[in-house]
Amino acid sequence: MKQFEANFDGLVGPTHNYAGLSIGNVASISNASSASSPKQAAKQGLKKMKALADLGMVQGVLAPQERPDVHSLRRLGFTGSDANVLATSAKQAPAIFQACCSASSMWTANAATVSPSADTNDKKIHFTPANLTNKYHRSLEPQVTGNILKATFNDSRYFAHHTHLPDNEHFGDEGAANHTRLCSDYGDSGIELFVYGRHAFDRTKPAPKKYPARQTLEASQAVARLHGLSEGKVVYIQQDPDVIDQGVFHNDVIAVGNQNVLFYHEQAFLDSAAAMQEVKEKFGESVLHLICVKSDEVSVEDAIKSYLFNTQIITLGNGEMAIIAPSNCAENTNVANYLANIADQNTPIKHVRYFDVKESMRNGGGPACLRLRVAMTSQEHEALNQHTLMNDAQFERLNTWVDNHYRDRLDVKDLADPQLLIESRTALDELTQLLKLGSVYPFQQV
Ligand code: SUG
Image (tube, rainbow, N blue to C red; front, side):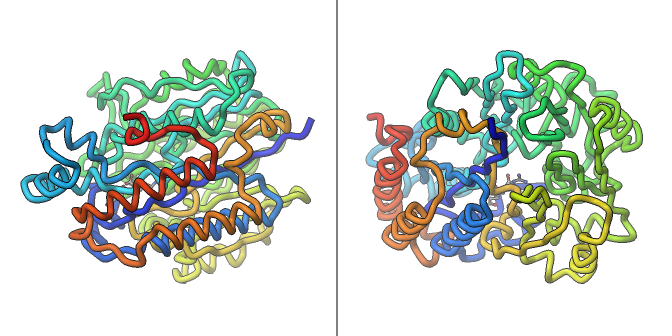
């Protein structure tokens, strides 16, 4: 049976905008109130998906969420017609209103944590949607994310879906952005690295001082339990609180892994030497490449600006690996130099491909943020909803769908336009038919 890793990218939603909602995420704050282009953003994402499909990768699409989120605004006491809810909340509570308009579900690395069947005790692929409690705008996602994942991986013989963890900061969970799997072949049992920012139930432990640590150890442990992972195959690693305070709000801003390669910055982890020792012991005898980038090669600041580590490392058909990097890496001299020489190191990484995902980057989302990885067998591949997979015809259809429904330009002040809600719901209704998802959105369930 063939085994491989599929990428499910988040399709950017029609309300993509820059509202400066994510304290601790430098790009989000510094681009607050700039004009966005939802159409460009969606097309940049689709282009990356198509390019990976063309490279022979299995590539899927995860639908965006319903925004503006009128239902959440009603929960907060705004009443009347939908247009009235938008108008009154935009006027009386603009920050809350903007949070309810974010297209942040596009970063599907935060959609869920996924453990492949090779690692779980019941040999199913396990999904736990992330609760994203640290940011109000993101905490609105998990319910519908769960609906979309169930409609995408829709066969209970192969896929196990959990409810997101309790919606409380103690169990703050950011999904796959803080989770990396290392293995020899994708179908072999691997080790799962859960990287957390703080201990929720032990205040004596180190924690960042300036910016929030979004992921807790206790959340990571709960996900590992739910997924039926064996203790000998799990490593918990604390992020260095200092790098969180410099803007590394998720671990995937400073480390990325694929198969037997872990590519990370020397300042990523609190006790890197001990963590890497445990990784080596638990990984076992097979060859493991730990590629540690030193601060004098690339500083943490350059890593955050360029998103060198928010790259996707993928395995091509011939077994060589390629780095899928944002074009911002090519524009940063230190990072471009580092990547220019990466193929000469004695590691499987032999190619670098650059993609323009600037609309997403301006909100702090690189190529790796835009995708959820699901390692699977060919049987599991056949069992999932085939209409969510990218191919030439689907690429055409989705581009036309974007052309028909998305605006070229959106300012934060446009978010209260009642027409935008109508456009967005019309687009999503059509999309659920295109991807054969059934009714996954609240507006479809009334
Ligand atoms: O959660 N930005 C996202 C970026 C998520 C990136 N994902 C990973 N690293 N995996 C966040 O901070 C900004 C939205 C705004 O400001 O309008 C935002 O939500």
